[in-house]
Image: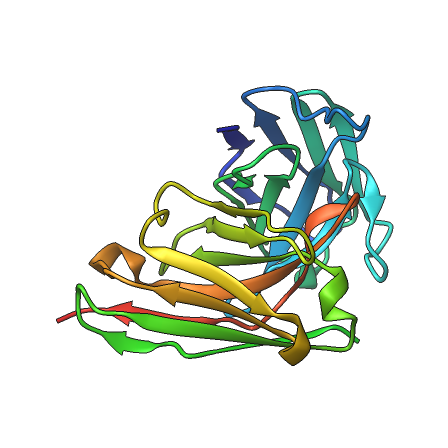
Length: 111
Length: 119
């Protein structure tokens, strides 16, 4: 099983400032098909998760360009520029390179 | 627009059974693998099971293998999770989530259904 480790687990930020979340996998997420299936999700309280980023750095439709993903292999980062009120909640990384699918523990973003 | 609606949650005693359903609409259900994911109160996300849309490929998390069974009915645009031998630690909100092959494991989520296992 691939273990996903996020840091920090809690991130207090100021509106308008940037936030960065790290996700590290216990083994490379590079799939045999050449893709790296690392995604990021955002969950607001009482809501289901919402997909933000897929394959490291690709934003889903409707996701503001304030959100950006980067990384390779086992180390990945989600950066949120110019944090807004609506960005509060918990962010999860998840991998689909190998079963079982696994998630990071979640990082709580607090204003 | 993709729409996933879970149902079937509720209160059940330890050792009991429950069957969850997920009704899908807004997309060609038979073209997409599907998953069940759960979230215990105040905890993170836990993937439970995957079922391919056409070939007989199913995967389970160790925590539910042998107790839960995933299935789907493409004609009814529905996904199911039969849960047996339920334990206190199975208490959670259960989500169905769609896989977009070649892109990501979870690109759409339902609102979830709450399962409470308690005597």
